[in-house]
Length: 360
Ligand SMILES: NC(=O)c1ccc[n+]([C@@H]2O[C@H](COP(=O)([O-])OP(=O)(O)OC[C@H]3O[C@@H](n4cnc5c(N)ncnc54)[C@H](OP(=O)(O)O)[C@@H]3O)[C@@H](O)[C@H]2O)c1
Image (tube, rainbow, N blue to C red; front, top):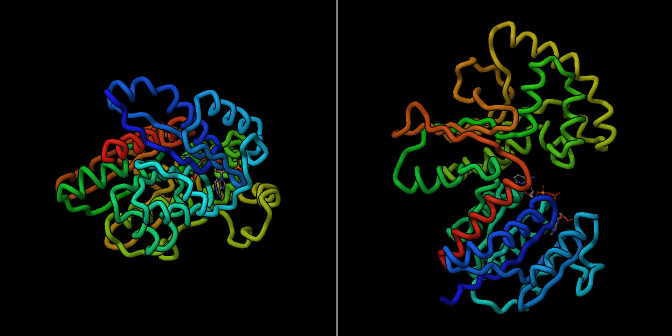
């Protein structure tokens, strides 16, 4: 049987990007045997470099690039590497028939590449939320075709987008509300506050273990959760911009002007506030959670006190949970499980790639 070759252009070779390359290599045989597909990397980029090989990289070459990135190498300094600033002209060199662009960067710089991929009717897979949480116009442009998939933009590989899009909306269900705990960092913060740990130490620890965005304010300020809520809201057809999402920040607004280090140093100033809040909440037999809510054309993200039996409570430390209340599902349909981590996220990206490969 001849294999269907799918050319992959991957933007980003960080934790998720490297895990993805590894999973593509490890599963080659299965992809060939069960799906008749060969995933062929033709380009890899990091923030300022790109390596391109029209015929595709060997697994050995891929391992060299990922190993080099693990030890903080720069693609532009590697053999055949070139400086790259997001210039879409480079795409003209790719002449393959079936192409998928994978955005596992954490930047909005690749947006023109994604737009060009749409114009060429190539597939797009995003783990990067930024393009979809940008302007509504861009969201519509990128997602108008089902050749764009973005499962891992909300709660990593948990089937959140596919549940909403394919199993509920496409089949005519009417969504009344979506509630969820989707910030890995803020789940950890809430649950460790309950164990009387200090707010500042929880954030410091989460940052040190890579559980936060590089700038932890993205999580602690509610912006990361707000972006996820916005993506879900837009799938429901709410015509919202990011500024329309009401997101509660867990630190004072003025701290946005600080450097990351200065912000981290200020955190102990918040310890007593959150210790008090946590004690009060527990004394009322309630639980503290950072919750996104999408309903009635609106979208918000806030710290809430929930009853112990609430659908969102049974999540363990690393879990994300989403509750879809609809005409068919009342009580709600719950999607719950581990919702972060590079390897899990990579598996969700790979699954999106394989779905697209089968549509091509
Ligand atoms: N980690 C998770 O659990 C998780 C879960 C769900 C979604 N995501 C999303 O997945 C994406 C990747 O996450 P990660 O943990 O792998 O992040 P990461 O380790 O910080 O890696 C980001 C990668 O993107 C590259 N990059 C930055 N700007 C770029 C640009 N303009 N063009 C091409 N590449 C660029 C970086 O290059 P340099 O190496 O040069 O810095 C780096 O290789 C993020 O958008 C994140 O929000 C992550």
